[in-house]
Each structure stands twice: as C-alpha cells, then as structure tokens.
Length: 220
Ligand SMILES: [Ca+2]
Ligand SMILES: [Ca+2]
Image 1 (cartoon, protein in one colour):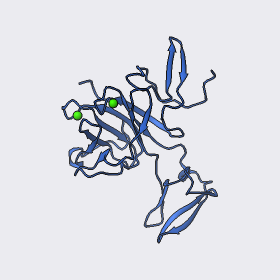
Image 2 (cartoon, rainbow, N blue to C red):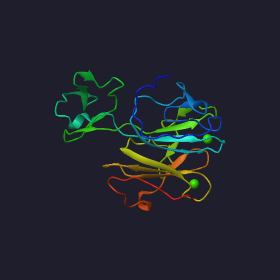
Image 3 (cartoon, helix red, strand yellow):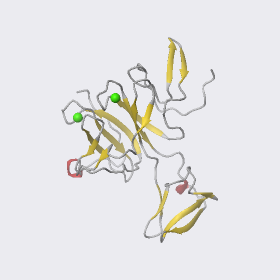
Image 4 (cartoon, helix red, strand yellow):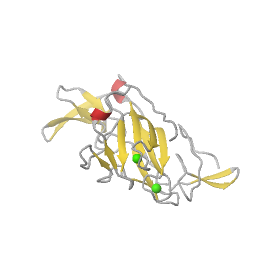
C-alpha cells in the first residue's frame, strides 16, 4: 500500500486489543506489514501537536488525549480578507476570503472583541475513549467529561495546545492530565476521578506556567 501523505508529529506502537494504535491507526499484520485502520474514530483534518495514552477509566484499555493547534493562521496573513456582519446584536466575522464562517472549516473559529479586534481561535483538543477493539470515540464535548474547579460541567476551552501527559499527580492511582498550552492559553491540570471524568484544579494551585511551555514528568 502506498502510504497517504500526512504530517506526523509522533507515533506509538502497542497492542490494539488492549489499546488503540495511533495517530493514524494501523493494525499490525505481521512483523513488517501494517494495515491502516480507516474506521479508528480519530478525527481527520486536525493539527495535532502531541498525544498521551493512559487507561483513564479503568476498563483495561488505553485511552488517548491529543493536543491540537491550528492548520493556518489567517489573522497574520496580510492577504486575508475578512467580512463582518451582525448576529443577535453582536459583530461577527461572516466571511473569510469569501468563504462563509458558517461552514465547518471556519465555524467558531473567529470572534470579534468589544474593541472590534478579531481573534482567531485554535482547534479544540480531543479526548478519545477506547472501546478495547481499536475504535476510539471523541468525548471531549460530552457533558460532564470536564468539570470546572467547583465541580460543575464545563465546555472545555479551546487552547493553543503544545504537549500533554497522563500522570497520577494526585496519588490515587488514576491518571490525571497535565496540558501545556501556548500564548494566552494557560496550562491545565485536571484531576481524574477514576472513571474518566476530569476536574480542573484551582488556579491558585498552579500560579505560574511558561508562556510557551512543554511538559515532561519522571515516572512515578
Ligand atoms: Ca480505558
Ligand atoms: Ca490521580
């Protein structure tokens, strides 16, 4: 098979029956041959920067977190033409280079600040639950997967994601998430309740992080 063109940022090799393969899923046929698993459930068209694997829900298979960034920064391209409009009394970017922002490519990608400045928003990270047979389901938008520091369900913010690790930082045996982000996106530390539900810690417990940070942790 001729491998499809793709930009890779990393790879893992592990047992598919216990865990899924990534980031483009491949099934090992024998020692030197691989078959791409096209129905893996992995999102296509995203701009991945890092990934981490752990059994976040204790069912025996590895689950996956992928940090995403952006494919192209239209805001810093001087040839980009923005068209503005109003929706529900608010200014919005209605078209980019003649393409409607209601289309999936640009949906929720731009916002207009109170002073009229346009902000471009990065892609949402992805959290995948493994079904144990190599199929992954994206659950980052499911209600209750992410909780704020008060324990209320939150829509996980779109960050400039650079790196991620699963480690048991709370010492309860369940893998927690540390996500390093860039620019104005703060780093995130989320504590796992053992069932794959992640609760943010108070910002007072993570008072400082680098503006442009990566993360590495020693084994526990
Ligand atoms: Ca699991
Ligand atoms: Ca933990």
